[in-house]
Image (cartoon, rainbow, N blue to C red; front, side):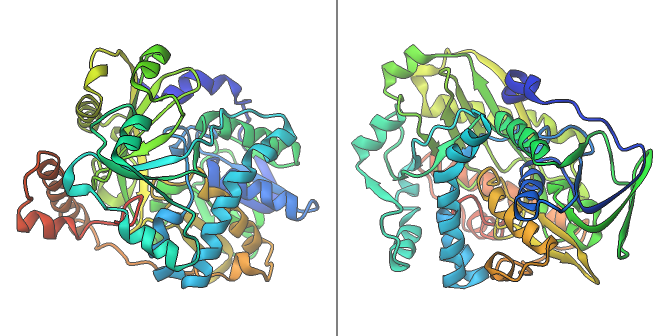
Amino acid sequence: MGSHWLAESEHLFPRQGKVRGDLKTDVLVVGGGFVGLWTAIHLRQLDPTCDVVLVEQNRCGHGASGLNGGFAMSWWPKIASLCKACGNDDAVWLADQTTRNIQGLQSFLNGFGHDVDLMQSGWLWTATTPAHIGSWNTVVEKVANLGRDGVFQQQSAQEIADRTGSSKHIAGIVEPINGTVNPVKLAAALVQIAQRLGVRIYEQTQVQHLDRGRPAQITTQEGTITADKVVLATNAWAASEPELSSRFVCVTSAAFSTEPIPERLADIGWTGGESITDSQARINYYRTTRCGRIVFGKGGGKLTISGRPSASVFYDKTLIDAALKDFRRVYPSLADVKIERSWSGPIDRTYNSLPLLGHLRGAPNINYGVGWSGNGVNPSQIGGRILAGLALERNERWTKNGLVGNHNRRFPPEPIRYLGGNLVLGSVRRKDAAEISGRAPTVIDRKLAGLGPSGLEDK
């Protein structure tokens, strides 16, 4: 049925032509999602003399950036993984940057005259079954030990039930700084901002061959691009690059949107605009929109063979049905609400759910930023700033922190990755189902589920 966000806001995107003939540029950005657009913007802000070209194989903002839940989240829920990957100092610095980005997003957009429905109303990390109570304790303790004990606030069971509009939420915490956006409005705004800053944008332009020379030579359907530097920001489509394909898996996330129900939301008390997740491994994520809809999503759907997105990732009916079932469990009083749209999309999930940032082997002029693992709306600003610094060869903390060049754990080769991954996913589904129903999962399911990649939060 297609993304609610695209149906509502696709008209905001100015159409771009495709590359025809031969182009030359200082930096070529491949990928017109959040990461690519923020990279292009930062490049022009850091060096207004730098010529920047961005190419997108489809239309800007129509991939994962237009299919997500629109959660603008910090990296504090991933602080344990960040510390392990980067060390404590860099982890705190990076998490602080994600907080500052949320705080400064509205001001940045106001400066260019854009409204993306930003609501900075906080994020609730909740439990909807006794087995999940306290899933956040390790993160809260870690954050406090790092000197940031004000990041999360404990909520009573009554406060959680009141703020979420459902007594099915029995415990939780809040991170007040987090917010929500209309992700398609944000992507459209970034396209227009990039163009105002002088970025040349081309759509319907697929990179067919990348010659790793200096300068790099790129072949498209109807032309070539010669670029001193290249930035690959193609999310799950980066699986076409053999060096990167073993670093992440492509898994679906699904969502649906309801009809506008502002009066019903007022009746149940979910009026603060909070974004919400539960504590399942196949996480449920949900929020309201400015016009009173609910957008409810679920992660952990089907794996794709070879890690490359196929057409089936854009409508994972099994996962959509699972999300609907959970919605009716959590909000039984809204069981009669009409579902207007449903969709799914690809997530490029790494083992620790942190992005991969660096350059290709033997090609320091070709940088990449992939593996955003379903939390790229806000952290993509960090990625864009890092990638811009790398492309401009700046010697600074943005380019010298522990996340850059961090070699995350690799996944096994195919077909072991696909077959083993589905075995793990089956155990994850059964473990979640058992815990939600109040049963203890089997030892085998618990152990196999523990082999899966880390999720949105460290729990």
